[in-house]
Image (cartoon, rainbow, N blue to C red; front, side, top):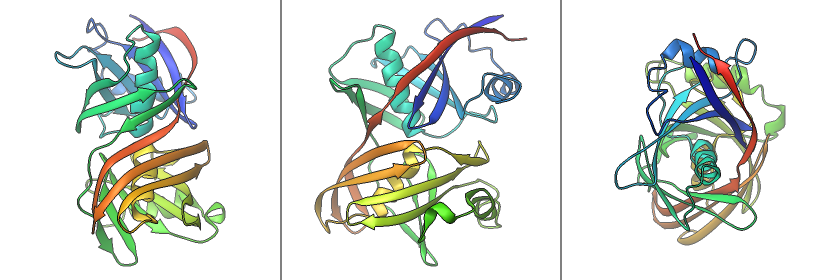
Length: 261
């Protein structure tokens, strides 16, 4: 079977994307997807996405982690699949699509920046001196100084596989506050089981924890290994965040075909 694929990246978070509107790739198995995402024996990617047809929506986003298993929401993936939809000829002023965590809206501006509306957040759990919240995927936020000196792989893995989180897994974000409205984030991502260049839901979670306006509109600039993202949101009160938008670049890298056996 020949698979026609497209490679996209959003601040270095890279994905294999396929047009599955006719369901021709729905047969793919967990092992096949895992091998496609393998960086030595496959195409190589942090995740795999199918763009499906869905009544009442512009499309449906089906996301798989690099281990081949269907994953929770991926923010950068949502921005990349929106740009992919545009390249397929689905042109909208505002996109509405369905993902595993529900309905999302997205926009593409004239500079190609993709803004994705995330789900509201109404719970932030304190965990010792750290934080846990769900922005479509579960995230552990650990404030640190000198984040670029952190061994993200080892320390992230230690938390992800600790007795508190081993069963379900959690994404681990190390966050350095640069100023009131600027942070640096590095993420150990479950499913990839390594540090990724950027994690959209993790960037969003970190920005919410590091809000600078007690109530009302917030805009946080987030630097990742792969580039800079912006998170905009309204804080309505203790642990209550709405109108959350993840904004940044999403670009096609290349396209090609591969035989899948």
